[in-house]
Image (cartoon, rainbow, N blue to C red; front, side, top):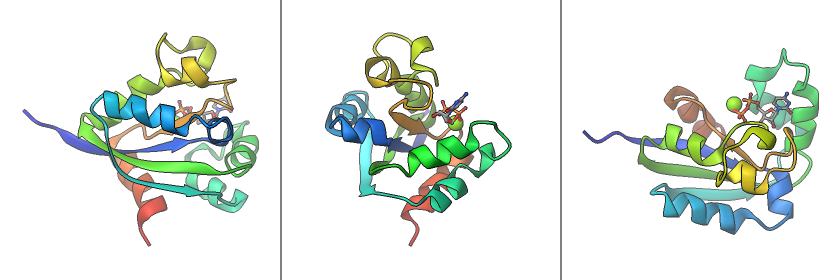
Amino acid sequence: MSNKEQTLSIIKPDAVERNLAEKIKIIFSENSLKIKETKKLHISKDEAAQFYKVHQAKPFYDQLCSYLSSGPIEVIILEGENAVLKNRELMGATDPKNAADGTIRKLYGVSIDKNSVHGSDSVENARKEIDFFFKN
Ligand code: CDP
Ligand code: MG
């Protein structure tokens, strides 16, 4: 049975800065995740704080928001079969040290905060996150 989903990917400042966006997008395309829309932007710390609101109680929240707003990012709507889970698999574990071989974070992540990509963790959050960046 088909289960076409959409999910949000963000190529974070560390990866944009190192010109890794095209390489990362090729990984998505080669793994049957279609790039539906993409947009480059540089968000404010307030916008980052809104986006990461689920993490507001975490000790790393302030740093996380500073980081995501520290430079240009690329936000991407991915679409495909089980896109949410597939993207999470392609990304690998949050800490690049623990990420499986071949995953984006293993290949390109520098540290737990500079881990190159964001990916929605559920279909519901994907909808919210896509709306956050793409609903005018
Ligand atoms: O991004 P992911 O869903 O894998 O991880 P998360 O638990 O939802 O955390 C969101 C982001 O916060 C991570 O991608 C890291 O960049 C950052 N983080 C951090 O800086 N320090 C931690 N101890 C945990 C997460
Ligand atoms: Mg998360």
